[in-house]
Amino acid sequence: MKKVRITAVRKASYDDLIAKYENPLENPCDIEEGQVFIADGWKRPKGFCLSAWDSVSPFVMGLSYGAEGFYDGWMKNPHSAMISCNDGFRPVSFLLETID
Image (cartoon, rainbow, N blue to C red; front, side, top):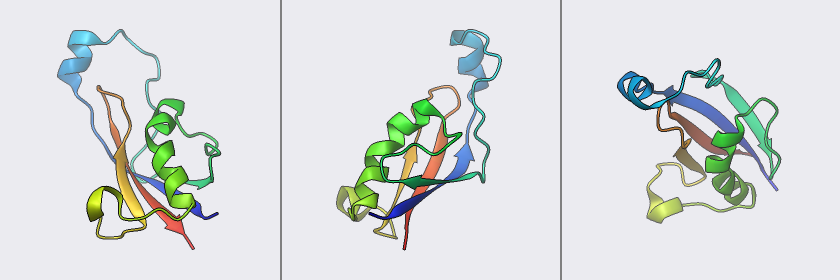
């Protein structure tokens, strides 16, 4: 089983949606652009958001077991995937890559 590097490459914030729909939160998202996590199979990396893990974990698991070419080859690197978390207010896009 391969390890998978998870890099936070973009973090958006939809302030208009936050103001209109979200209850005030003290610390809604700790992930910062450029942060890197290493996943060892199905184990969520320490400090990685549980909600984001729910979004990326199926792809992490697939990559760790050798899956490639997701969705008919949409990634230039077939051993990678670009997946966003499911936070509709401040989504984070993660680049997942297998580590040899």
